[in-house]
Each structure stands twice: as C-alpha cells, then as structure tokens.
Image (tube, rainbow, N blue to C red; front, side, top):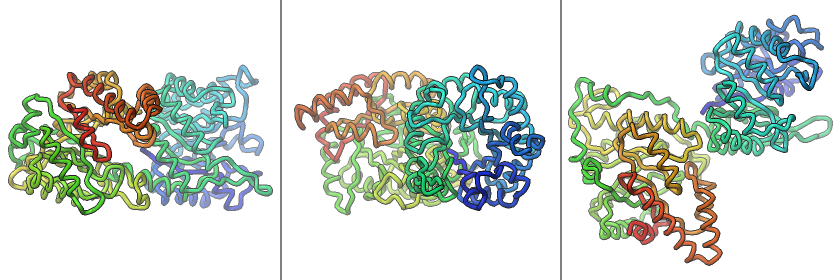
Length: 599
C-alpha cells in the first residue's frame, strides 16, 4: 500500500491565493510557497508527491498568456517537488484534462490532444519525475491521448484516474468497471478514481473497478462533497473520517490511496496512521530457504517428522484436524482448558490458539498455549502476529517459546489496531509474515536474523496463512509464493464457503508443493454470517450461503444453527479430498459445534 499526498489547490487557496490566480504559474512566481506545501505533505507521511501541474497544458495556460511557458512551468514544478521530497518520497507528474472537448463531441482531434499533453510530459520529464498521474478525467478518449503522450516519451509508470459523479458514472456515462476494463486494455499501470465525490462514493467505485481489472487500484477522494458557506465552498469530511475510509478502500482492493479537493496534510497524516498499522514499516526482504540452508555457521535442521506430532502427521501425508480456541479476555483460563479437554477426548490432533484476533485484547498466546499443553496434554498450533512486537521482541518470544516446548507456529501479519476496541493504540509491524517466516526458518537452522549461530536449532513446524478468496488474488499468490520460499511448511486458509473457489486456488498453487489445511467456520446465525461477510477482512461468504442462512433464520435460532453446521459439514466434505487437514473454528467457544462438524 502506498500513500499519495492531498490537495495542492486547497492549500494554496488557504494561503491567500484566490481562484483568479493561475496556480500552476506559482511554480515560477512563488516557488518557496509551493515547495513548502510539498514539504508539509512529506512530513505528514506522503510517499508520493504530485507536482503542482494539474492545469499546466497549453490550452489551460493560454488564457493567462502562459502557453509558451508550458515546458518551463512543468519542469520547475517537478524540480520543486523533487527538492521537497528529500529522497523520502517519489514524485509523480500530475496531468489533468485539457478543458476541451475531443472528437466526436468537440473540435479537438485526438492527435491534437496528444500533442498538448506531450509538451507537458516533456517538461515534467526534464524536471525529473518518477512517473505520472493522469487524474480527474471524464472522457476515456482524452485520458487515452494523455497515456499515448507519456508512452511515446518514456516507459515510466502511469497512474490513470477517472472521476465520477454522485450517480457513480463519469460525465460521459461510463461505469467504473467499464473504464477499468478499457484502461487495463490500454496498459495503464494503476487504475483509479479521484475527485468529484467523497470517500463513500469512491469506495463503491473501487469495488466496481475490481470487477473489471486485476491491475493495482488507486483512490483519491475529495474530503466529502463541498458545502456552500457564504461565498466559499467548504469540505467538511474530517481527517478521522477520511482515515476510516482509507481502511475500507484498502480492504476493497486499493493499493494506492490519498486525497483530492479539500484534503490537507492533517488528512494525509491520519490516513498514514492507519496504513502504518496494516503494513510493515520495513519491506520484507525475501530470502530463499536454499540461501539460508547454505549459510556457514548454521546447523542441520531437525527433520519435520521429529519436531512434533502435528509435524509428523504432515510429513507422513496424513489428514490433520484442529479446532481454534480463542484465549480468554480475563485472567481465568479454566473455560479455555475445559474446552481443550473436550477436544482431546474427541481425538482432535491440535488446538489452534489465535494471537489477538481482530485486534482484541486477550490473554497472551504463548502463556495460553503453554497452559494447554502442560495441563491438558493437547498439542497446540500457536498463531503469532507481527502487529505488537518489534523484531527484537519477536525473536525473544519465539526463542523462549521454543525453549518452553512449543513446536507449531502459524505466522500471520495480524489485524490492525483500528479494528479493535482500542483504535488509538499503535502497531509495530517491523516486518510482516513473510519476514517472520524467514526469521523462524533461520532459527530452525541455528541462525539468528543476522546469520549469527545460536547453538542448537529450534524445532518449529512453520505454517502461514493464505486467502483463496482474496480480492487481489495475484498479489495473494505472489505473497504466498514468497512465504513458501521463505520457509513455510504448511498453510491454513481463511474460512472456506465455496469449495469450487478453493479447488481453483489449489490448482494455481500445485507447484508450491506445500500441505494446505482448510479453514472451516460453522455459522451460528444469520447475524454471524453477515458479520463475517461484511466486517471481517479476508473472509468471503457467497450470497448463496447468506440466502440459506436467511431462510433458516426465519424458522428460528435452532434452525439457523443447524443450517450453519450443515453448511460447514458440506464444506468439509467438499474439500477433504483436496487438502491435508482442516482447522475448524469454535465460534464463541462452542466446542460442541466444532466437534459436530468434525463428527
């Protein structure tokens, strides 16, 4: 995920430059002021700065007598943004519409439009931009002319952003899924929406664009629709509101977010706070397991079949069963231990212990797992997330847990704090699940993250999560490949509600040669099903399942539960021959429901 800056015009207007001024010319007349705005966005956390050149084309500059200065204005604006970036942000050349109607709706030909854009592109390239943002276009033919101008001049990345009205369509009546499909065909690197409407309308557009393209998506909404206050237009969406929608936009598939009209550095700062909570501060360096295995000073890893009972069954190709039990919110472990005793009596292979799921504060996963293993005698698979600890803390935890006898770990990135009851708490995310997988794999070879020997190797059986129903499946597959290459030995899927979808996914990962454990979630009620479908990131519940739960709920609570169990049993039966195990959730601690599914 990457963060654009916010509005330039809004900031210049606030600094006393009214609408009769050519804002693009301020690169020449007020360079220190333009640079100051860029620097404010850098301090707010923006990773990509847009040049102050939205209207710096000959047709837009002409009424101000500045058409002859097109290249100079663009070059200077790019140089100002580059100087403000201080190597902390990339610079994208901003290109907006010409303000002319193109054929067949107007007198300007497509080639004439391309030539106008080409002058702007040449100036921006001379100023040293890293790429281009074509934004706020309504006419597909016009944005295509701008794309041609860029592609004929260079091979830098191009972000293409259309604008929509309150009806969800462009001014020419084009739907988001349709213009996404066309821009994809023309080779846009990123496809998105900006301006015109606020976050809610842009969110709907992103959801629709995802149906028309597999390319990365971008979203830069206005700070709401402008309100007339006296003789001014005021944007009322608060930074907190914009940040809350940043999360939804990312969950809907956007990989680039930022702000348009009405947004300020404070809006971007709040959006940055959210994005930091869902992405690692340091990009994962993917180190192949072959590279680790060949590192001098390491030790031979303990064979998988010897590390744990869970590992032995996986190594032998046997079907494994586990049930997920969430640790208590308080200090009394007795209900959790009672649930685990019931699982052991039923012959379940292991209990999965989540690590603060949905950013909820609960008893720590490591002491919970240790109590289960020592007092119940049932093997655990601990979920361990990257959200709450820095690299040093994770290393200490995992070494200590290994010394205490824990053996099975499911490495996950973790849900952001914004999802939980303490949204103002901070997240660490020094590394993500790929980096942590590599760290644990190194420990299994007797090496710390710096390749220093630690003595005897740890004996972890390393698992990772994967989502067959991911919105951006190509990205999910790419990350899954990295996880396997980093050292993963089994994978657990998000809850499966569509066996055919899982089957398609499994065919695409056959070459990875890693055992897959399918997640199974028995639904307790229609409300439970709707909650999973709409409020739990990464979970996809098909309309066919929701319809079944609606029909059952009309017959009463017991009928809904029975239908939820029936659906879960169908899912298990549908995937059993394709996977090497299942992880069944015990919603709200209802172990008897999970055991009925396994029954």
